[in-house]
Image 1 (cartoon, chains in turn brown, green):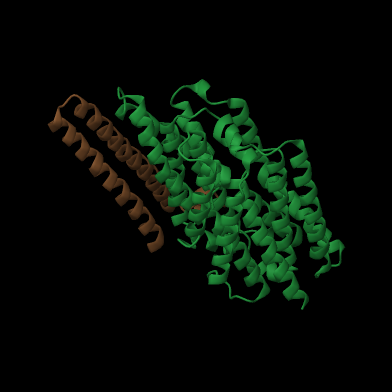
Image 2: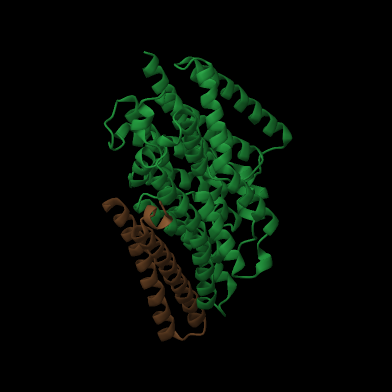
Length: 81
Length: 371
């Protein structure tokens, strides 16, 4: 008797589910941290707390670079398949 | 000569389907960017069209699934193979246009698969259907993907709100608008990757069934290029009525919700394309939109509209299959060969023109101001 357990390639399907979920959540966290860093930079600059402002800006910058890296990595993995 | 003419009709019909796929699915790709104000309609659609084109060249795993894992090309070869593919395509295009006419974002992919399965069943019977591939690579991933996008978007929006909590809304909204340029771009790329490949797969299936290509062949470059061009042109032409349904009627979105729903959709579609699962981008992005809405509050999702969309999803496979089977029956009644496809093509073109004229008379397309 043919069952779902034998028809579906579960390892591939689970890998696809995990990859999609991890990629989406990671991208969200990185972009949101970037937005927080940038917004805090503006707030701290206005309060003249420059050390905290630059630290926040660094968070924003690193997040932007990570976002780019994640996108490039995702496309590379697709093309390399 | 007859076989060549039918092959040309099948290729043109497949590219016409690809065009309607892009036209129909533009909403999935750009609606959230437009509804949150992240991009103007013209810019969002042009951006999506270019990335749809590029995305079509990224992978051929989905094309391989469509060409050999849904119906058996060798089983079709014994029948009137090209007429089977033609009838399936007409079934899919018909269902796409019916749902476009009524503004329902149903699945172009499931319409295509339903149409081909219906016409193959009518022509050869169950022996032509690759049950393992249909269930394991289409139906099961097709159910899981929108649920996954829903859950991931719900989790992602909860995390986003926590991270940007207590910040002034101005910079946050501006930030997520910029983020939507990336997430919208990724979604367009993912859409091109998954959906253009379905047409490549169908043309490859026709070329294999016709004997032009050997079984298991990859799509030739001209097939990839023409499928990429057709979906990009369709996307650029846009479908304003569906954009309105997807972008504003399911939930009223803020920029963070737009970003997370697009990001979740893009990630799920790209991961699935990598493994050759021919997903419905419509199902996935609508799952993402609902997930990002439900995380805020249950009542944010307009469940009546969402219910109509789910109904259209459930109807798509059997309806397209029934039309595909009926169209194949008509080609048989016409004596097989070229006569049936030529008559059906002419009648279809006339019906499409009538539908467009009636659609235009019922009301102007939704403009940028309405979205």
